[in-house]
Image (cartoon, rainbow, N blue to C red; front, side, top):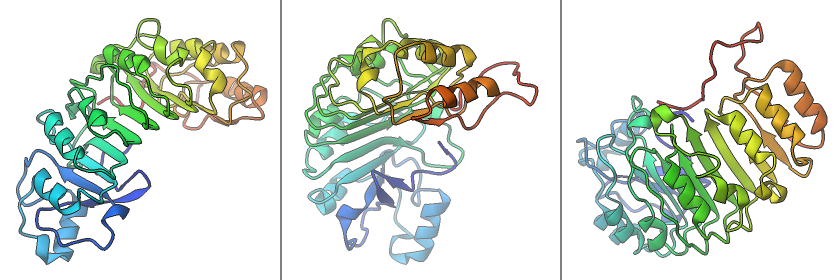
Length: 325
């Protein structure tokens, strides 16, 4: 993840900043609209992309920043298919207000909450809240992605059409993992959880909090499982090695974490993984010999062992995750 700037695209669509008074776009359904919920700056979003946009488009240069949900819904609510809500780094988003707007957008299929607003932002600064009103307000939503874990809540929900669910952050709260595992998501194909570190709120435990996800009873169509950015990557790998949900996966993603040889050995000693199309452990602490063993024993699988973190002497003073601050 690159926090140097905000999203350039989302859900396969190019991102476009919305400003109140923006002239009509030729195809408003073909972009992911980006709105700044807080109005925490003046003169529009301060990032270089939007500054360049304002210079090139004089009609929006003098508009003040801040999201006007009512105006956006009135202008594009009937046609918008993807929406990005930017984070202001100071307060949690007004989820109820966003949900009320989303409920008036019948074609919305993809929603991202927590995009950064400037190049100095860190993921740990992104505040969140209970986001379950969002899928409840959008029964046809297919993709929900949330960045930031401070204050994040996700009690169990049922949603018939959600196919992709992603929680990014430096530390996933245990109740969020439990809520996902207890949710009825019959259409979900892609689940991505950034487990993180306890220093940034990562309290999800394998036995108590991830049990529902690893069992997969409520996720009958799941094909991609990402348990990423995990400080306890070895324990995650050991649990995955005998987790029932793995048997139906096409892709298992354990990347961005602190996986060592012990975790890789647990993977190889557990249930067969040769049915997988892809296994990713990118950003790892494996020795060259263990990385070679993964490739050899899973020869039919696309195994990604890129970005090794061990020093040239094959050792490291400490293991660390890729994304925390």
